[in-house]
Structure formats: structure tokens, C-alpha cells
Amino acid sequence: MELHGGWLTVNRFCNFRCGWCYATGTAFRSEDNMPLDMAVSLVDLMHSLGVSNVVLIGGETLFWPHLFTVATYIKSLGMRSAVVTNGWLLGHERYREKVRRSDITELNISLKGGNRQQYTDLTGFDGFERTIEGLREATKWGHIEVGVSTVVSNATVGNIDELAEVAFGNGATTMSYSMCGPIVTDGAFDDKYMPEPAQVVQAFMEKYDKIHALSRGHFSIEATLPACLWPPEFLATLEERGQMSYGCHFKTRSGVLFDRWGKLIPCNHLYDYPMGQYSVDFTDVASFQALWEKPELDAFYKKMLAYPAKACITCATYDKCGGGCPLTWFVREPESTILQGGERWTS
Image 1 (spheres, rainbow, N blue to C red):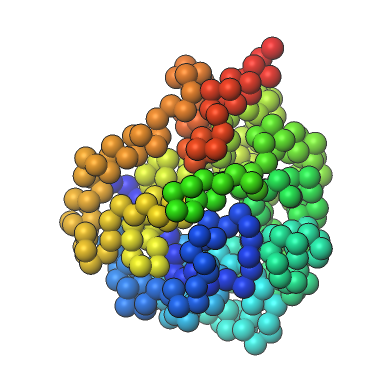
Image 2 (tube, helix red, strand yellow; image 1 turned 120 degrees about the horizontal axis):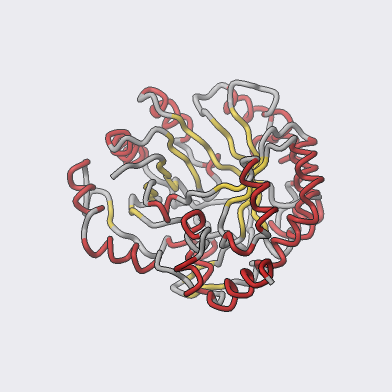
């Protein structure tokens, strides 16, 4: 077992209501906060497992009352802490000063829209100007790394360049694009915010030169789509420039993710599918490793990570992408999607 990253989903409350959010089915309850003692125990466990970077995620992480205490504890163990936030609270000067003086190592601000109207429409909250103020001020600090991420949904796929313009125009030095995945609620998968794969590829091809120039090359696309859906020459350019990011922790089993109740979950989208729980199924390295190596867990991963389509078996790019995010195939037909993508660039 070789783990490189760890995630703590520390709360569920958020002031935004993004329709594509994996937490939609949790009702964003304000009382769903991870207790301090549990967070410390899970950080200890991750430290013992060799994890060097702890990602704190929500909900809206900046609302978690124990954030600064846990960031300091993480630092005391020689680990890094990365906080994923919608950035709105950073627009509050006094709170922003608390963040600036904290032991947080990195901030990842999730940009929801490329302009005020789109932002408000998608989040249900008029927070664009305040979020941008927080981004602009935080990037001046220097001692805390500040990056921007955005989810490419069917609402934003047409203006991914505008998102980059806003991010880099307000101080961001890096930006990552992730693809909108399905919402999972009570075992049902909903794809209403997911753009078609071909639409995503076309958008990046059309907007690439502008995004590359705005970012000075410092952007990346998370490889949730099968590599064969991208034109080979374009994919080669992205890879050569380090702009295609492979290596999802779920697909490589190289990271651990705990929810607010201390449950080990495969990824935040699959919060309803716990694989074990702290203090019940594991408490230390030995008991965690025993759980991690259980045949039932191994069988789950093998089933989830099986070849999505026959074409993947002999595909030269499969070792890179693993057939894309497995959750995609709960709402898309893999055989036709992958076959059409491959034929499009080889015919």
C-alpha cells in the first residue's frame, strides 16, 4: 500500500447551491461538522500511513470551526494542508486576515462562473464580486499557494476561456479544469449538468490558444475522459506541456478519503458507499491495512475499474487514462462513446 494523498471532508454546509455538487444529496446541513478529535485522529492515521499532503474539503471548508487548529496540527507533523474553498469568505477582510496568518499551505479556489450573472445563476448566490476580491487579495500573499479550479459543466463549457480570463486576470498562477460528473443521490445517478464528451473536446480545441496564452501554459485538464476521445496530436501537445493531468487517486488506489463521519469512501461522489468507518472498522495502521486488503474491497475496485469497452483492451492509451472516470459509464454508454471517439480521429 503506497499512499500519496489524503482527503478529509470536514463539513457539509455551504452557502452556495451548485446543482452539480456531489454534496447535493446531503442537504448541506450546518450541523454536519467533523469533530476536532476525529479530525486529529484521522490526520494521525494518514501521517502513519505515509501521506504527506492532506486536502481539506467540504461543503464549504472555510465555515468549518476547527480549520485553523487542524491546519496547525498538520504542519506540526511536517505535512502540507490544502484547503478547497468557494472563496466567498476570502472576500471578508477580517476573515481573510485569519487565513493569511494561518498555517494553511495551499488554497484552491473553485471558480463557479465566468461573470456575475452566470455565477449567480449557477450557485443561487450573488457572490461573484466578493469571491474575485478574495482571489485577488490572497494571490498577493506569496507564502500560501493559491490556485483556481473550475468544473466544466454544460453551462460553462462554452466559456472556459472566460473563466481563465477571470482567474488569471485576478492573480491566479495556476488553474485546473475538471469535468462535471454525475450527481449521486440515494443510489440514483443524474447527468443533467454533464456536457457531452465530444462537446468538451471541441471546446478545448477551439479555446486552447487563448487559455494557453492567458495562463502562460500553467493550466491543466483532469483526465476524466478516455484519452482516445482527444485528437492524438492535440493530446500529445497537452501531455508535452504538462497540461493533461492523469492519476485519479481512486483509479490508482493511491489516496484515502474520509467523510465527515470518519467513513472511508471511494470518492466524494460516492459518499453513500462507505467501505469502512474509523473506530468501528479501523483505528490504526494495522487495522486500516487489514481493511484495505480485504477481498471484498479488492473485488469492488476491480469491478469499478474494469475495461469500460472492448476497444479499451487493445488501446495504446488505456494505461494513461484507464478508460476515463468510471462514474461516467453509469450515465453514458461506453461502447458507443469510446468507439465513436476512436473512429473520429482515425478515419
